[in-house]
Image 1 (cartoon, one colour):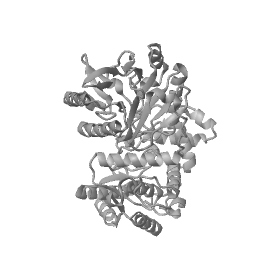
Image 2 (cartoon, one colour; image 1 turned 60 degrees about the horizontal axis):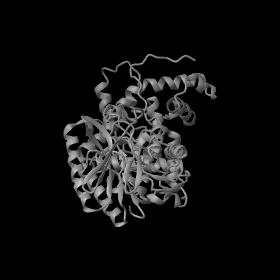
Image 3 (tube, helix red, strand yellow; image 1 turned 180 degrees about the horizontal axis):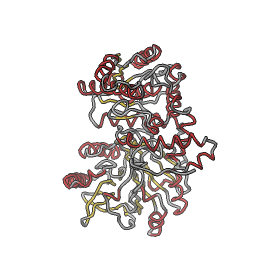
Image 4 (spheres, one colour; image 1 turned 90 degrees about the horizontal axis):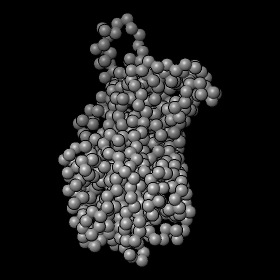
Length: 549
């Protein structure tokens, strides 16, 4: 046994389905780990295929390609370099498992299969994988490694079983998506396992965006006293070298503090960047209205992709204020991105003419307002089709929750970067960005969003003197009600007991319920809360239940 056994934690950003690309990342990390003297390298959960693979993993040709890749890696470990603890799907005895394979010396020396398959929120692993028996420790160079794959750590059963079978260290490869305060939750669960077993916990997470999920990395190590002795970077790839025999000798580390606004901003930025780049779009195009939502979306896009890949378009109507035009143009100038102004007035007039006969005798109403939104949606989609950039939808969670959005209008697009961000959080994130700039952001420093954008009354500007509060309560009230309805799933009586007006609570609950059909047709967007308006909250569109107060 080496006197100082070193394990490399490879906190990497895989792409689902990109077996060759993921292999290349692992090979580069293994080479770096070897240069640092590591004896083994561990990858995150299902790294080889990317996480989560969803039903792609059921395709037999995909499983065969993964097995071929594993076999090539097995041969490479005959070079005397670091062994590999590889996260991959693996078929054994005609069952498909979420697995960790130990590759060492040109052989597969151990296979660990996940026992506890999550089936909630964005997870549906019971759909694609078979649950395995409790895992046995893996013997490696004099150590007995207890390997718990992600969810296997979240209850005490497996850790206790591994301890009873003489494991002396717990390794936890993960694909744990970000949501607010998730890191503290992970550490709390890991601390509980340490407390129960007296064993150190090595928690390795992946990083990067995958569809609506974003992974924050922030891998960490707790010693046998539950102290955090090492933590990897958040929001970026990292390689941490860990002395397995000396974890308890490491000093407790100063855990980096991250404000909620910073975490929100970096999650949105990374989620957008990876969605655009992993799907091969040359850039993005978005409507710039002069309001705070589109302003924040534009800043995020420039920070994530660079100004040369962002195209902002002001689409004024007869109801657009001069201030909105000025603010949109000034923001684009500050960001250094392309800006065009394309009036939708001619399109509105064409619709008026075309519909005059059939609309005869009817007053103007929300129909004409929706036509304006759809004119803008058509314009952006035309630019996307002609030139290739993906359309970003700029609506926020407050609006999407209550249906304050237009199908085939502002809901059109390939990605809704603010989909899981309440309006009050939009303001907080914008003000945070005016003072701080993430190290990997590609946009300018300083106060990029003008104070007038942050202080003007929110308005869709679809009719004269319109304001959001004509149809909605103040956003701090609305967001508090929505938080209790969506995130906490409280009943109406419980929400009213928190001091909210009964009629208003029932009104908002009804709007939330009726807007389900719109949300089903909206674009995907980054998940940052516990209950994203997608897989996390699955309500029927046709639904006659009315809760009584």
